[in-house]
Image (cartoon, rainbow, N blue to C red; front, side, top):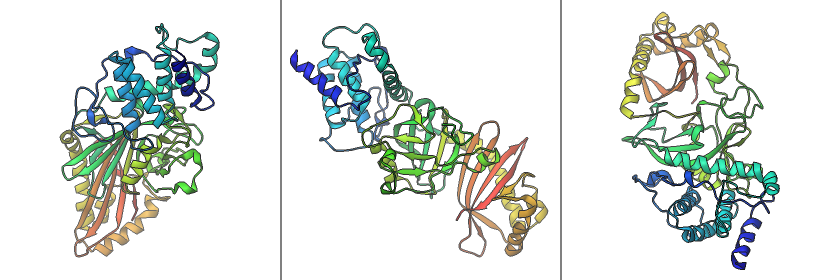
Length: 433
């Protein structure tokens, strides 16, 4: 008896000051029983299975993306199958390797406490202790439930987010964030198409989604791109192992009058493994090992990041079918541009067009110069990328290299198209490289 009391005291003392001396009991078993997940859900394992694939325990201090979560889920499964002794052993090993993983510490403390008496309710603690510890208990419980929800509700095999209509070979990877599951999905763009290679727990804004103004503590929704990779030596410890800024506000955000800046994918402070599901000032925050993998994997400027309240997963074939009407419009614009006919080309541009502060009237001379320089030669669209964002309006984000016949290279451009009735119109065009 004295031994387990000592173990429990050690577990509690390992928590940050906000958690010390707070007594938590077992998480609800109903949420744990019957949990199924794909084996590839954690750390990019291949294949799928009806039960979780157990991730081998690595030596202490070996940091690997997704490993800590995989080990936590293994503990959950052992608890659900009434293997309490094995669960306690695995939990003890987990908190020894990741002493700052607060949720794991909670589960370990629960397992130790559960050896003394049955648990009557979730958070079965003395009223005096519950009063002080309730907010933290609620945050950890939310984190646990979001991790389990994302692993129960796996994307259909081979499916992709509906926003990814077509990616060019230059888009080697893509990222999609699903706020409803507190999850970030990492894709690799292979010759056969997009493949989900890993997914991770994330935290979003304290006030939820759909950022509108500076300081509203919300995470933006839309299609973005990673703009840079900030050196962790230049950052405060608060941002963890690094940061990947995205281009919020994008063209559509600015058109809608949205304000704010400094939206990053970043890590956690050294003493904190993860944060509650809604705990940031608007950024997307990951555990440092998970962020490290993303930083090592993705490229700046060419990696799209879709952030959505809830991702819509579709088959690649259905995405291509949905893309057909827009492709026809884009081909018609390409034909008009190749013809050199100014009136034909202008018919594809919206009256509220804006290019880096220039109205359509102000920008038209630059377009005329381009057409005169091309002298009616055909243009080719190289490395075409099509991303779709649908909310109150239907928007296409189009990136391509514009190469005139007879030349080897040309500018890399990005256009934003909006569907107006049955027509697609360009409301932004600019050179990005």
